[in-house]
Image 1 (cartoon, rainbow, N blue to C red):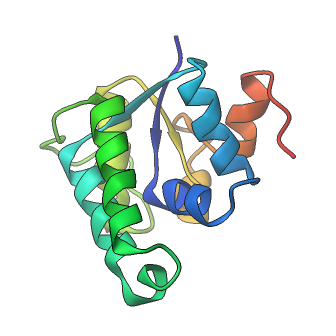
Image 2: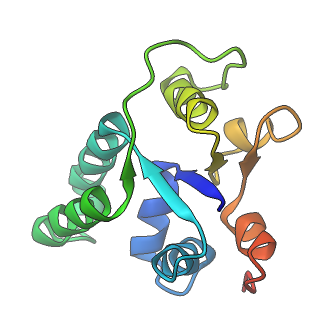
Image 3: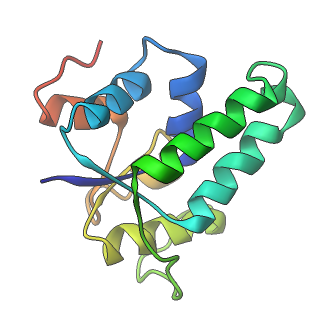
Length: 139
């Protein structure tokens, strides 16, 4: 079974746009199409991002907390990676995602260009690409 790690931007896009590819990707996960892997650092980053004032206006704190709790209890929880990846992202804050994806033998799903440009070297895909590989329409 395909294992995937979703970048925080994918989770946030799923919440903000229930008809978009990220939201459909979460639905595919819930239907058993792939295994979602998270780590404590990823969950903490998601909670922090959802608490930013700009997002807190769009996603009430109680809904944000419930979303993070749902992901935490439903996904596979992996240990945070302890080392730097051999290939680095343009954003050093995302290097842990690359290391986590390599350690868990998972595809990293992101909409961030500084990660998707690594697709030739690492299994980094966009939500639409993953949906297509699962046989799901991306629109």
